[in-house]
Length: 220
Length: 220
DNA sequence: TCAAAAGTGTTGCAAATACACCCATGT
DNA sequence: ACATGGGTGTATTTGCAACACTTTTGA
Image 1: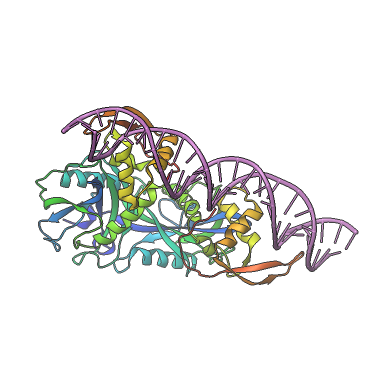
Image 2: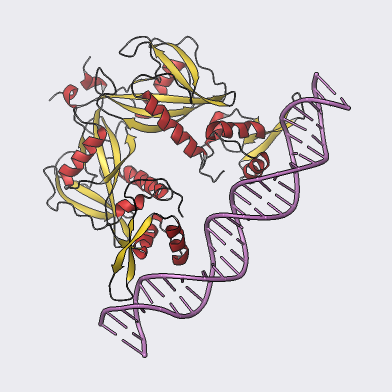
């Protein structure tokens, strides 16, 4: 019995998020060829025999977009029969989060003609079932912000409380009271002062996360 | 290029939970052959080309244990290189929940010599990385009980508030105040009265879930 | 009549919300 | 001097936690 017949192909796909202009964006790639050439898709590719799933996700991400050293988390595995019209493909999907304005390689790659950030709330039609992937990822992201310190992955090392608040507002999709927000966040003791940002107006205190690693907490 | 070389085998494994004597139990199977013959494992098997992942999980569960019509939810996909010493296998794992005292076919199946419920907190050594699977499943289960009505999957159609409370206590691993518990649960309006249970003592009101389908809620 | 489980209310505390004014700076 | 965003405190409400006694039944 050949594995060809009996086992689906295994692939990984990654939904990369960042916040630009206080709005959540997803990184989309335009495939050069294949059944969905010319239609936006999430970056991804096949898993190789000698690598784990996480490794595959990181490798594909680096190869297709130049993005490395990101927060990466497995999301869900999609395996319906018709998600790829050509072949049976099971896709293990990932969420990645990068700091605001995160840069990718503008030139695309062998596989993708170009890459672009698109608003997560107004996506163009996507290849495969990637729309469902992004929806699932958004749900996970919103939920996890409420009980983890994951925002740190979306912020540069230092930031103001206003930055942090607008980030929460962008992802949660609702306004928060500034005074209550500051009280709450500071009372958690996750931040430390890290200088001052001078600008057009009264200077704002800069903060940094005490620990830049995933933790469970109670917020908002 | 042959798929044999390039793509791992795809399998599903299912962690079936139930509550027996107010203690969480997992269903384990004893493989007849293979690299882990004689070591307890979670029931599972390969995904076939013509079925989705969910279908594969249900099929394997039915074939190996006789269990059908269960609540089933995808958990996580495990894909490290050495989880199966013989071959590269990516396993899409599932959590299943069945009502207390749930019966399985005692005789086992072609693949498994026998089946047994074991306390989730005191498991024997398990095959593959199934220990990690159960740990992950337990985490998911505990977390989800706090914001969904999933307990209904673990209960028969009618039950007393004491039944419900001891179920929560079993899974969360801590005692709850009876009066506060009743207030909270009843205030959610998820239950309806469904008669009376007569026993050795003062009869208890029976309740049933208004809706037997997964919903998000705020509890405990 | 006794043992065993079912049922029920109140009070205190802590956390969340709502809300308005002064401050520091660059232009 | 003024416009702009930064920074702070209090009063109210709401939800959670702690806690003890009475009721009903079968044995």
